[in-house]
Image (cartoon, rainbow, N blue to C red; front, top):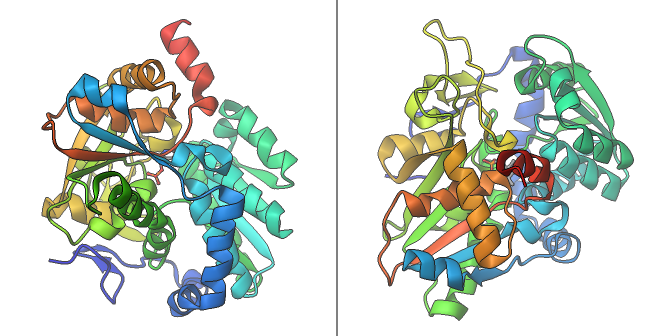
Length: 393
Ligand SMILES: *Cc1c(COP(=O)(O)O)cnc(C)c1O
């Protein structure tokens, strides 16, 4: 079985491009060009240069000695938290802004929930001097004031989505409407391995630098390019896709995905899509999503804004369905406890998203000689208020 995308844009039975006819020219233009552009050597040179000098790559692969001791196994942290803007998202937005330039686009749109992808997009638009419009739910604009301020400082226009629940899915609808109305000059930067083909594959390729580096760095540390396990949190699934990418077809590398179970899988306040989701269509792709009996998307919940998403990317739906990856649900409480533990054992304050991945060490047993790589997707600065009110510190 292949775990990569096929020529029709599917991972197993998931993926594809389920889009309104009016969006077809935009998506088709991208589909026809993305692989050629990405394989062009001048494109790769510019991409790699920016990853190095602007993002600060390669991000270290850090052997976490005290954490390893606590769980009696060998734990390496892939330090995406040390990237410019504090997470892995910048790898993808750098790639897509270069893609947009090659396609002759002069205007960028994006949607954002918590504001992290909006900030990563506004950052690369400032870098390139390109107009940036970010759609954001009216409620999210109120909840995420610091990120709204960041986007504005970076020169982006933040447009409130005032329909529906006034959150991420409504912002997505507004962005799609904008793209339909501006098909010639505008590129839509999607922030995870979601959306119609070719987005999931394109974003996975841009993020695959994570596993490419892991292989080289493990060679130095352990004299082998392959770990026994790779652990990552999954919201839409882009940091996980990047951390898994070069190991997908090697069954000796076991893949673990941490999902947000909120207050508990069956509490009604959760974002554990693999357990709760059924097949359906969200943001233009066929995947697993949380929905009511009559197919309306359910409002997700997680303490972590980046995992608060009702679907997962089609690659992950396939990894779940085929059993290639093991999905582990982690509650708010379990994640917060593990986040604090990393602070105190290693002096690293993780993003709450990444804390979900860390909680896997309390849910699964690893052997002393296992090499376990965990993708530390982001830093916790953005989450300080949340940590403070949770722990009453
Ligand atoms: C956005 C975000 C995530 C979730 O997004 P994926 O596409 O699932 O990787 C995870 N961690 C951090 C730090 C984020 O900002």
